[in-house]
Length: 548
Image (cartoon, rainbow, N blue to C red; front, side):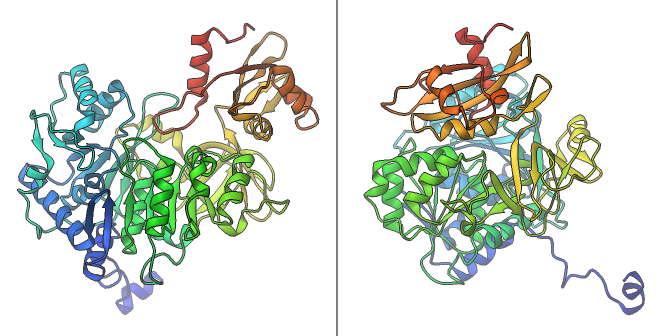
């Protein structure tokens, strides 16, 4: 087709090539859905017209503060309106957004601020102590701090920093936005959870995020928004600093209100009350949150029949938990698989593929998302056949630009154009992907590869077990053997002998754990995940790591 472009005047032009960016979605929503509610937080309600104006004010205030295109602006904010405003206001100023999880420790925050080079930090009043501690760890850090009091929590400003509302008042409600010229321009730095070392900064671009939002709407929530019918609403029950933030951007693209629970801590009763009040139709969760929601008594007390798309991602959801969710909610749960580097955009298992009977493809996270290609590869990068286990690799517009200032990580993450997820799995003949586990989780016992998730799935089918994790530990005879850490269900009684007896006939003998310990609770990362690294550290701390 190159000769046609040369001789017939065909090719890229302004009419068919405008840089894809999330900014255009809010601009349209403010025009078309000006009077519709955009963000609801307790008594605070912003329409799309209000939202657009506040975003413009933030962009103008950042520009007046000396922020120029390419600068980094960080946030340490819970799920409050200011975080939703930063999602658009920072890139509207041409800057790069760095959302920092509020549950991170001071040392990690110090590293992120130093590595990313944030010029300004928007920080909730309640999290100033951890920011102060982070800055004290590195005297070279000197960002300008804008304090953001929670409009519902009632915590008075500290008086030490400029307050957010005063700051954005210096910007005009019609301040012009800096739109990207090229969709490869950087939009955000997304720091990974860093379960095996320092967090890495994935560079997300305008075009990547624009594609992901449109893909979320087509593959995860088809038919959402007033363009397709009235009455949609979304509830945000996971941190906006992570996957839920992408979900909220998708709501903006369709003029849908995002409901933010106002309780200081996750409260299932509040969530279900809001679902009923706002006739919520979609939600983004992680498996641990969905499990808590459907097991809470309030789920039976409120009408949640409006729900059409309850999306879960971020970690595997065990079969026992899937069955419970299907029992309580009906056929509305949707799974996707995707890392922060691919902004949750690798596979989808739609609601219509979730079954409570033997039609369910047990362990599958679905098929490739529209526009993406997934392949199972061996260690040399060769494509493997159906049901052969290898590394899950992906290519397509949702893949990030690379890790910021980390050439070694980039060299490991990319091979022949494919992004290597680090997850092991296989694909069936119909293209459904099954995750076996992280490559780092697999252990070798007596020469056989053992994938912990298979064992964990079976343990969790035992009604006496609420949570479980299996990992390999050194063994003088077999090299490694399995150790299971279990959290009993409330009121349940179970010992190691009883658990191992339960696994007979369910798990091959060579795969059964050799050691079993019981804890009251599992350690979880700042992202709510159960990580093997933290469990291993806790075993050592408790003195429960067996001798080889």
